[in-house]
Length: 203
Image (tube, rainbow, N blue to C red):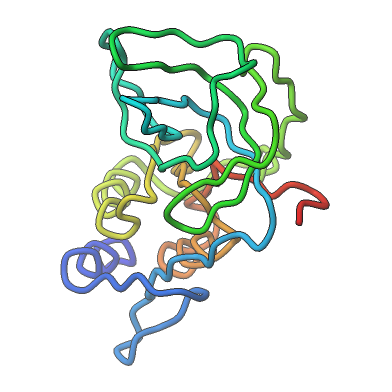
């Protein structure tokens, strides 16, 4: 059985999401542990969607309706006062922002002033592949993508193949999910990207 078929069997049979780092079950299969919440503050880029006063931070796809729709992380401490770049339709107000705060694994507490994404210009992260092609072929990428929803659950935001790699966007990763992907599929097949990034010096 190939490593990719084995991963598919893992996803359908018994995926365990626990707190910690990548581990192995008694049978030797890799357990995709959920990363611990970040210890300090993080920065996230997304759409803040406020429906009737309940704000959420959407880090994944946005439905192209009017008003738009999305499913996100509950936001604590959000206020539209003094903020530009938002729209309102009915009881829905939304806008795209870079937001700094603390994430406890279920909600996001705002700690800094949001910045409109149109004005936000962060330094681009380094390419984790170093520009080298990945090792996965089209069939292997398809198998991995099929397994992701069971392996990652609500943490999964999006995925796409490129140059032999499967790029996977998740809500938060401190390296735990990348370790699990490498242990399951081998290094050189999957890149896990965290939508939330730790803020240097954030307490």
